[in-house]
Length: 417
Image 1: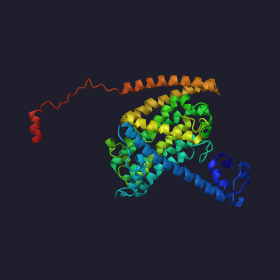
Image 2 (image 1 turned 60 degrees about the horizontal axis):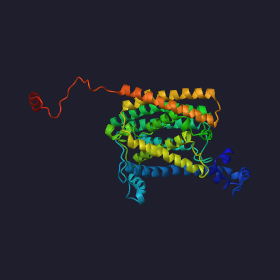
Image 3 (image 1 turned 120 degrees about the vertical axis):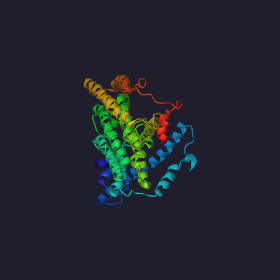
Image 4 (image 1 turned 135 degrees about the horizontal axis):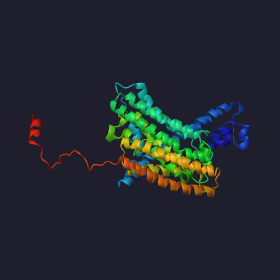
């Protein structure tokens, strides 16, 4: 089986359970079952690989919640969580236990089946994304030759989960929020997909392992426009600031989460933070060369470091940018990011046509050209957006009374009557 030579975690369990000629060719293992029971070893190994990755994601979510809250405290000049455990490290665990024991309420007019199914559909795609991400050289669940396309397909399920959650509640506020969320998700899926076209043209593969191995220099240097568009589109897809209108308290209460409580709300909360980790993992793999790094540390450590840096950038954006209006969000997607992706595709296509297989030195030259194009494009598009969004308030035809002015006595008498 090819999976034995490519996946270290699977081979560790499989070859130490069953005695196989394929395992003997790879290395020395103490398999105690005969080859006739290979199906048992295969099933057990698959379950253990899934168990390790799922629990690793859950552990990473708990740690990221604590780390984000500590960073929020630093950004806002306060302490952050500091009660439960040293430096508040058990705060996330305490919150999880608290959510478990809260009352689970289902509205009377809700569609109970869809109401229960929606949180599962929200968190399921996140775990599917991690199944194709290579954490190390041979550390992954499965290596699909269409891994990048698989991620784009799976993440689109979040829009379906939002619609189901809002519709199943039977709440008009939740329905309005859900429809607006779908408009944002659909709008940003297009520039997200197009931002990866330049990466595919350079690497020549959809496999995430192949993309990592093809990065002689990180693609963030070769594809700065693609990175910026993909990063902003990812923030919109995972409902992070400044694109978190779908559940903004100042806009539509809690949005499609308005009627959820207890562990159903906890699963949505888990899905949001897991999605942030998943988006950071994809960015680290596609644009930051994944597990590649100096041989001082194993590839898994370099991947974790890059993942942490992207998560820090997401938190930094949340603490720095104000929330945008829905018209501004859609305007940015269709009249800003979409055009930037087209510019990136055209410039990359020209470079690939000139030099189909560039050397490292030629890639550095391409990176310099792409950064110049990136800066010029961002300036032009930003000026275009600002010009269209600029509102002239100096020539307002209406004059409104201020606090120091006195109201007409006739108007006051009418109100009293």
